[in-house]
Structure formats: C-alpha cells, structure tokens
Length: 235
View 1: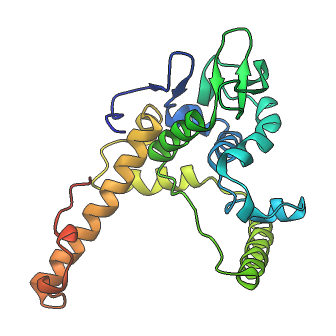
View 2 (view 1 turned 180 degrees about the horizontal axis):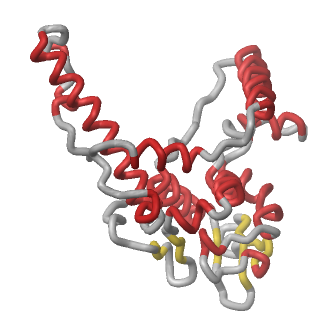
C-alpha cells in the first residue's frame, strides 16, 4: 500500500472511498476528526480501560469485534472528512449468508463492511496518519491487571492536561525549521499524508545531520551505526 503522495482519496472498493483531507480541513475540527479515527482504528489494547469498565476482557475480542461495538457511536458523527458522502447511518448489522459472519450492510446500495474491508480501511488510515498498531498481549492475568491499571492512570493524567492541538504544535515546529519550505498559510493546503511524510522526513534528516557531525567530531563511531541510519531518505 503506497503511492499516496499526490492523492486526495483512496478507493477501498466499488462502494467505499476514504478521503485524504488537507491539514486545513482537519485543523478546523481536529478533536472530532482524530476521535473518529480512533474509533475506527483502535485495537482492544488501545481501549482496554473502556472495555474493562464494560466488563469485557480486551484479550478475548478482535479488532473487528471492537469496531462493531463502537459502530453506533460512529453513526452519530460527521465522518465527511473520512468517508466523504458515505453515510454510515445507512448501514445495519447483518449476517453473511455464505459464512455466517457478522457484516455491516447498506441495503440501499449493497455496500458491505466486513472484517477484511475494515482491516483495509484501518491499514490505509494508519499509513497516512502515521499511526502504529498496538497488538500487545499480557503474559498472564497478573500482567493483564497491571496493564489495565497503568493505562487507567495514564488516562487520568491525560485528562488533567490542557487540550492542546498536536497538529498546531507540529506546524509551528516545521514552519520554523529550515528544511520545511512552507509557511503557516501554505501548510494548510498540504494533504495530511504529505504533511506527516514531510515531518518524518525532516526528523530523519536532522538526526542524520547530527550523526554525521558526531562522526566528523569523533564522538560517534560509524562502525557502530545501523546502516539504515546512514540513509536519510525515508522509505
């Protein structure tokens, strides 16, 4: 899955297309956008606290099971920056008659969201937004309880923090970096994929430059470096 640099959307199948919005479109309602993305791509590990509060063992459900649980919440949201004109309110739970699996079906158009299509949507969204998939599993019951309590404490700390725009922080950082050729206004016209690709490329280039300075100064040994660190062009 690649080749998104100049695209503004990605076709999942004949019925479903996912948008690649601009920075400007997202920043108008950043919280709503990323909260909706989270409901789509989260794994049970990401939502272990919420699942525990609901009496559900996060190690016993799949990503698809979680998505189905969260689907009603998604149906009540404005998802135009993610799915364009597709209205999730037109989808309802159904059974695939061929294999007996649960699917989400739009009776009007015949559009289907099943486990495979959901996975394809998630892989695409994670790639354009640089989101890592969390699939950690505890080794035993004691480890599971520890993971849940640690996540619960982390959530409480995050709630006490003031709501800051991470996207705005990234924009300020990049605009004030010599490697980034855009100003505050022109940055808004970049797609979110172009923006994050630029961000990670610049971080990699700055790290490379610092390593080379260390090599020339004799404080860093070239022999001890991973060969990947000697190439600043992102893959």
